[in-house]
Length: 413
Image 1 (cartoon, one colour):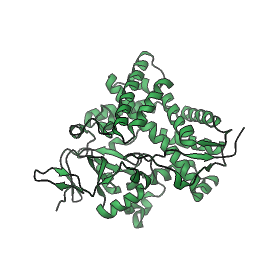
Image 2: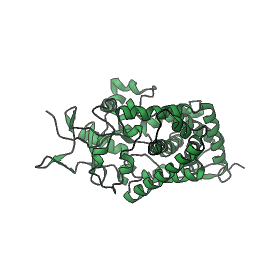
Image 3: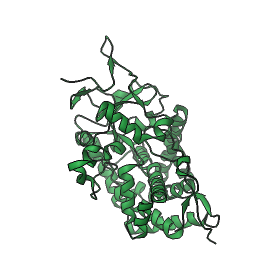
Image 4: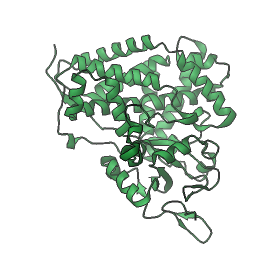
């Protein structure tokens, strides 16, 4: 027998109404203890969980690894096009900028998805990995030089973010002035407040449009110029939205991947000892991507009709959100006979899988790995400047993001 959507109640006209059983992914309590929340969800609901992404915005959160793989590999039944869903969502909805339809690969299916995806993949493949590593080393050295003599720093603001911002801007051929506005807009979009997110969306749209016009006039050896020159013949609006996707995937998540990995190194003695014994930084990154990925809940799809998943009926056009953080830690694959499935093979879902898998994963790995290695080489006696319990995590349904990462170290002249 098929059950209704998890946590849903049905009115006399068949419409779903919010249930008290829904978990609010947008509040500070969830941000502070997400893994405890995932455990509670699993006990109470199983792999498909009723949640609210914002007040009055219901969704199903997928916290089962195998269920997530099924959904991510089935774009026919779980397409990424939100246009019907967003017709019922007010423009003031704080998560709308992160979820609304855009003419890009992330929010398209079929022929259009293939067209956008080919343009994005080709433009990213043109990045020289050796030059990228050298660029990250240069940016990292400059960032460290700005605070090394002080003996203290907020690595989130003074290191992780500048690296993500400056490296991505260089890859996209974006001048600092435009890039600052793009980064500001993208940071606001990730917040869970309606006015902030709407303002961020406006700032972001204007800035990327300006970058497109600049690169149409002055093409160079950069990702934006290669997108413009691609056979897909993207128009200005399509170009802008490809860049929105790249900035969305490239600044906030990369900033948080670097910071979250450094935090893990500073607070886990066994982990730190492994690195000192020669364990690769890549292993540290994968541990964080397994356990606490910077984009914790995303990979959103919108079933075109009610669909049964293991006896649960998911409503038509209601968001289905993959919790990479919960799926990676699903006891179905981490405990018992299936535990070896996740051991040492980078089988986590943090880059997604299927047609929407991240096309820039090798670049992101290289940037984060190089940034962390440079930091540890330059400041080997780095320590957290406060008890771990005093660190605060930013509320929001999608990211796993610190508010600050204060550290101390012997000052370097």
